[in-house]
Image 1 (cartoon, one colour):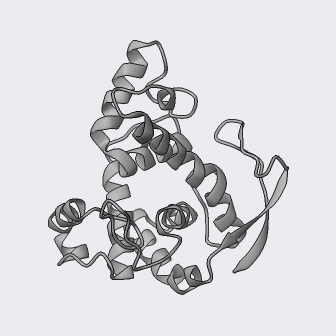
Image 2: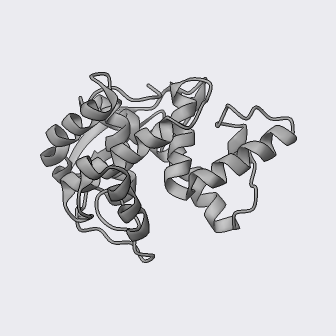
Length: 210
């Protein structure tokens, strides 16, 4: 494993995250991540343009599978992007040219599915800036766009800003179980406020929050 000294600073309008209660901490990028860097960059730029947030996608894969192409979760999510079989079938139908047949354990297919799904979500989610939009996208990827829509409606009804995720919509639960709610709220924070900075520091490119 390669160790990189990661300095944790402000992100997303002053949000701070500390590792081990220290302003600096060691974090690790798995060695196998490097073999996928070029392909992820190519896929991301084809979908999002030359300024694609490659470090955000790398951070998302890091959170999902720690770059294990053969990863499989207890509930059946598969591959680098941990896509559920039903979602994989839907994505292959939605993006037939990019994805073709369903191959979740093919690293290229899995990265393409993750990046394409994030792009599809981005086209349907408005927010106050790229960082906030990124958080909404990640919450949707993890738990479904329908839940995010319901959470936004509840947040608005409670007087919170429905276009801001951090410390706004993320605080409102429109009906998820306690375990699902906790997992879903941790997901954007880990990716955007912890792992994204790690990949930026390692030269993977820009992210949505830093």
